[in-house]
Length: 313
Image (cartoon, rainbow, N blue to C red; front, side, top):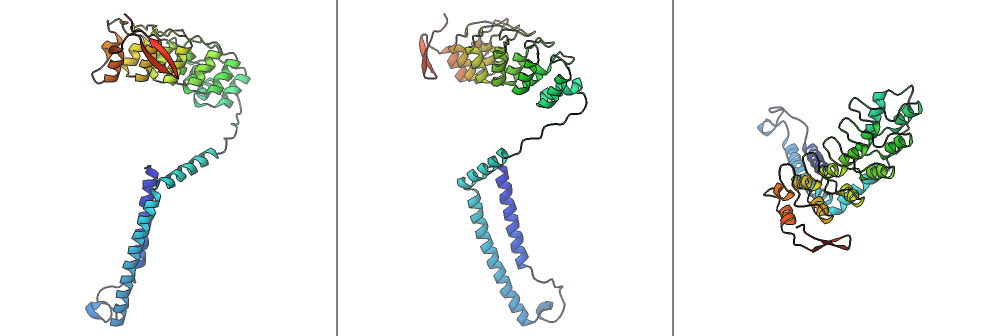
């Protein structure tokens, strides 16, 4: 149950109790004031009336408790929660579109690069219209294209490319926009960059390919897209690790099966002499089963199609 509902229940309970207490309170009276038994300050007839009032107050408390219990049960009902969620979603959908940002004066380089991260396309457009270079970068040679690709701002990525941004521009670590899109896990940006001609085989200074980066990020859809685009699933980085090594080390079970299905070498050794199977931890029982107990010439089914998988000799 959501925290908001729990808080609402507490507020209802407090309101009901407060209402009951208010109904039971009578006029304040100090001890020893006026005539009457025990110095109550009331006449006998008044005491009788007060006792009757107390009984009525207790009856109200009982009724309030029943009503409160009923309301709590209604609030906890699945149908009510569904309506509450639907109402909140509808309110979110009806949120008005933000008004276009008014920009006066030239846009500084720092603001341009920051806008690419924040998704403020009006600032990016103003910078470009004023003659700013789409390849403008910071001290790490990271351009607006790198930043927008990491954050998944497809519209800004497309705008920068249309204005002449170098699609395979490398930063100080030799990462391209494709590397950054894979690091952010944004399939739409990966597809857009590919359509515009990005090179899927380029490696950074660690000799990591976009497939390595996507595997480490753990977004299976991006990994699957890269594999289906024909990248080398057995490409090695500077440590001699393939994407399968990374997937096993990080326990990316779905990606492990995907890589093996598409020909990843399960016996490949990295510079430390370790195969993917050697990197399996004791608690990774499912992964060990996939890597070690897979019989030769077995068949797997993917998207309704059968694939014949042969275990490397």
